[in-house]
Amino acid sequence: MVTVKSRREEYAETTRAAIVEAAVERFSADGFSRTSMDAIAETARVTKGAVYHHFRDKAELFEAVFVLMEERLLAKVTAGVAGMTDPWALMAKGIDVFLEECGDADFRRIALEEAPAALGWARWKETEEKYFLGLVTGAVAGLADAGLIAIPPGDLTARMLLAAMSEAGVAVATSADPDEERRRVGALVLRLLEGLR
Image (cartoon, rainbow, N blue to C red; front, side, top):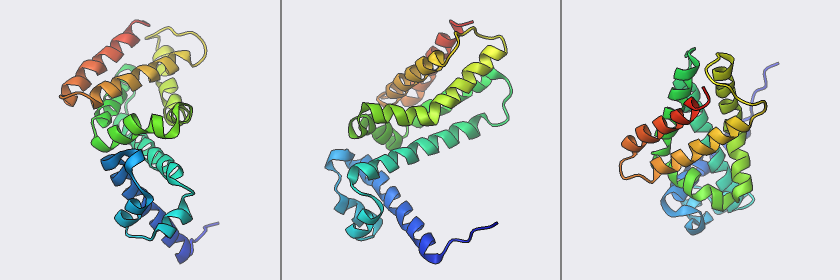
């Protein structure tokens, strides 16, 4: 059965998306603490009441922005490795796409700099894992299944790799030469994995 959205539902979705995009712009430019709901409403060209209709408070709106950043990154990584069958090449490409995104100004400011403080470390980590732990676990399992690495049972290897990638992402984001740093830290992450051969 096909469900057709009403014009009102479509308008509400469009308005919510415009608010989130405006919030990306404001949080990226001004940071979480210095961004006001008034500024977001003005950037989105909606009333402040419309912002509060969709989001209880600034923290909830920031979380929606962070989730959008994670969804975009996941889509880019997934597209970047689409059709690849060699597990090692797939891992290398996935790491490179991730690190390239860390050099993006909006992603850097929102996901790497602001999110841990704005959401709290536990919520930030939970969201990161929701979007990427399964992906990393699958890639690590692909390497193990192909006999390329030996790992202990469970997802500890994937969790440690995800933490290493997070640190590598911060290194890229804060580098004066993000492209060079991306190559350097990408190679380092792969060397860590090679230690499991």
